[in-house]
Image (cartoon, rainbow, N blue to C red; front, side, top):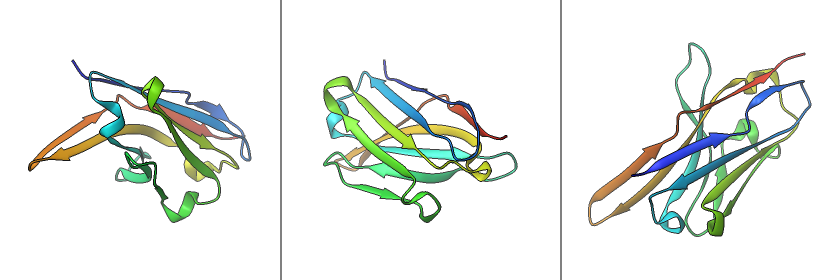
Length: 119
């Protein structure tokens, strides 16, 4: 059974920091690309950052220089370090694990963790 669990969300003041974690089980974790998405009220879900199975990262322009992704394959966990947080970063953050092979796609999502940036 595959489980993807996010943690680390909460309430933080503008300019503050949070570290989100995404822990997965039931999959061959090191083969998966991991993406963090977010969805603010009334908005579409957007990709924030992604780390490939090989460790390459990419970020949406609005978080470049502020967010950093890392992965620990030994712990089946990906971390999203968020700094210099802004009110517009407020959203539910979701972790997605993605792997494709032989024309089959394996996509799993977590339940989300709320991040609120407010004074």
